[in-house]
Amino acid sequence: MERDQAAELARRRAERDGDAEDQALAGVVAAARSSGNMIPPILTAAQAEATLGEICGVLRDEWGNYSENPVF
Image (cartoon, rainbow, N blue to C red; front, side, top):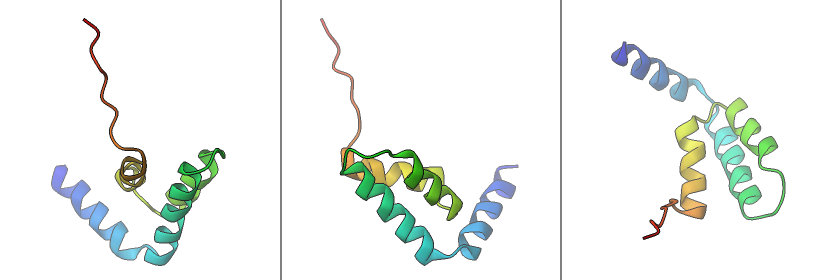
């Protein structure tokens, strides 16, 4: 099953419009830098076949990782 999913992901990445996906992810970054609504650019990125990992990756690059500070 894992190999099938990896093959499907590779096929979808190969067949998508890379320019549209790049522009959509840039829109997610622009929204992250503003106080605007994040949902429309994320939906646009998903419609451009950006993966959840790619969307989260650009947000992680912009905002960093959350790390809870334990209170003692």
